[in-house]
Amino acid sequence: MKKKMLYDNYLIHLCCIKLNNMSSRKRNRHLNELPAYTGQFKTKTNIQVIRYASHDFSEKQTNDISDIQSSISSDGVTWVRVSGMTDSNKIIELIKIFDFCIFDAKRILTTQYIMSVEEYDNNLLVIIPAVYNVDGETKTEQVILIIGKNYVVTIQESNHPFFEHIYAEIKNEKYLKFNNRKPDFILASMINEIINNYGDEVVRLENDLEELEDQLLDVKQIQDTLINCIQKKRREMINLRKLLVPFKFELAKLLRVDADLINNQENSYFREIYDQLLYILQNLESCREILSSLIDLYLNNNDLKMNIVMKQLTLVATIFIPLTFLVGVWGMNFKFMPELEHQYGYFIAWSLMICVGVFIWVYMKRKKWF
Image (tube, rainbow, N blue to C red):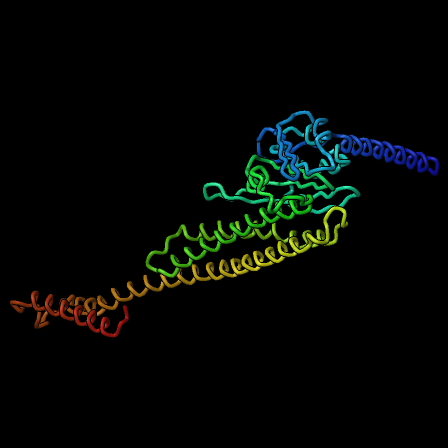
């Protein structure tokens, strides 16, 4: 019996070893797989290399990743602008130039829409979700910002012109802002553009909520579709809040980055962006309170509408109760009822019932019961 138990334990031990080996092989195979883009945009990967210095500007389109590294020099700022992440291999090759590993590539290509700031020895990686409005619909996409001592890399899922304003100022040689400024200032300008988009979305949400509030205050024009609009705005508010809350913690990291990447003189710009973020979050919280009050107002208005209907039904019932009483009395066919043989009894009955109904209606009207 003892030998059998030992033999059974030995078999169980062998099975455990095989299962562990199989699971480890699966994990290793999963880790060795190259990451792939998981977003919803189908934009073809396009790379634009912009290089500028004092009174010097050049740009070119390229598909050769090795050509990008040769474009980076110390006598100017190079901006590598990538739109579209469908070509995952090209994105991986690109970030390897800047000493990022495969796990960083996975974070970049996996669209989780959570802001993240990571500081490395020679560069800074910022993963930031951006929002914009197209035909009344709010869209979200992931934007990656990488800065070094003399370069900036922007990678976005689509070709939406997030930084077109910055590009236009550099291209048109409006160097009042960007002349001799390091990449940290460009990073602050780009984050500011994204924060401004959030501010525009919150303002649009506030305006929509004001319109809904005006409609809800008019009880007679309340429609059943209003609750669907309220729920839609509520989902928009929750989505914006979910995206913006991590900004509050991650932007604070930029104030503690190594001075070689973000100069202390530029901290004032990041503080201003942080203050702007707090203002947007404050407005978003007010939208949250307005939405809660709108839902309560909608429910109260439904009760009010029901009360109005019940009041109208009560009015009709109050008018017809005495009339029903009169009809019931004259409906008792007793032999010696004096009204039964009266020549004008039928017309007198109708006249009396009309007078009673009109009297009750006028009385309730003067009492302002309806």
